[in-house]
Image 1 (spheres, rainbow, N blue to C red):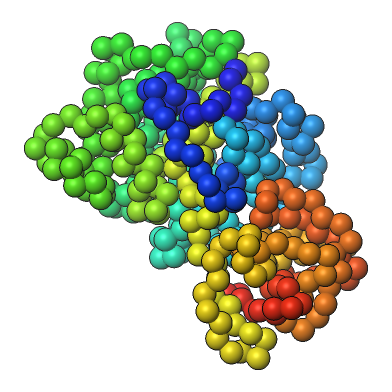
Image 2 (cartoon, protein in one colour):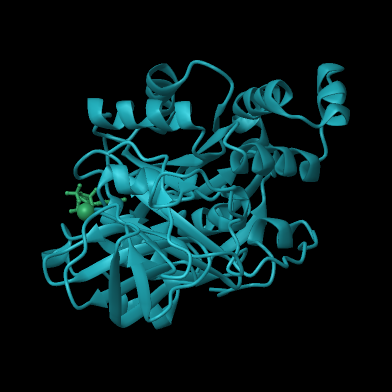
Length: 384
Ligand SMILES: Nc1nc2c(ncn2[C@@H]2O[C@H](COP(=O)(O)OP(=O)(O)OP(=O)(O)O)[C@@H](O)[C@H]2O)c(=O)[nH]1
Ligand SMILES: [Mg+2]
């Protein structure tokens, strides 16, 4: 299986070219996994980590699977931090995007529907993975219909893949509705093949839906005009429009995932490509609004490692181990907590360049602001 290819497998398959990135954080993604209990979040996390042999030893032990966890997988030179079992409020602060993990056979709970609504209000980029598509009760069409009723009745919830079964009716792969290519996990290595006319016929209606949804949401006038005239869009234009809308939080894509024999997970690499191509990198995020400790307003701070430090404790435990999201600047050995307490960092383990586990002398508290002792700041826009 190809690891860390230079370009996305989807783009590569279409001979596209990657755009070089210059911002020091732009090769990272900070992503939260959310969804109903038992929907398959930890399973998906392990599937994503399992694509990189070096990460195998870091797979989440099922006995510890309720604890806040950050798994990092490197895909196409992008460090992807995936946060599991984090407090919802912490994720809303700290994640650049969320993945909603919904089981194809279990429905959606009220808490997840409420979280979706909040993300819609706060325009948090996100996509949906429909899991357990190998389950005999799985019905992706039905789950997509339920999600569209529950989450949004507009064009912004866009289904991107359709499951393909093998001769034994086992989950074999997915058709990408944008490119019409089949991603096939029945071969020893994942293969991406052109679909035959029979498959193109089967997906025709779903693809029409996708194209008309793109016509409604895209900001590319040339593309929307062509679509309004009933012309077939180029695959590149379609993919760019989908990815851009997803990064901006204007559209949310739905893709599938499942398991087949020999522990092969189906859909995993597609999801990694989507995380890199269709979710925002940290440089696209605004730094939270900050003030001085006495409440004096401060000018907005750029989300840049060269700017003053603005970081937030997003999970603190009693052993003085804390997970910290850095919004700008860099941690130093001594930091100011909530503008009035100097803290010494004894040890730190970076998950990505801006998501770090730290050990401090004294335990910290959730949602504390960490800043530089020379430039103390407090994050203002939090509602905990
Ligand atoms: N067959 C199959 N089983 C799955 C799949 N995804 C998850 N499971 C199983 O479903 C059960 C629940 O999955 P978890 O990953 O623990 O779910 P979770 O969302 O992390 O659950 P909580 O952390 O308790 O909320 C486990 O037994 C998984 O092995 C899948 O795609 N196919
Ligand atoms: Mg779990």
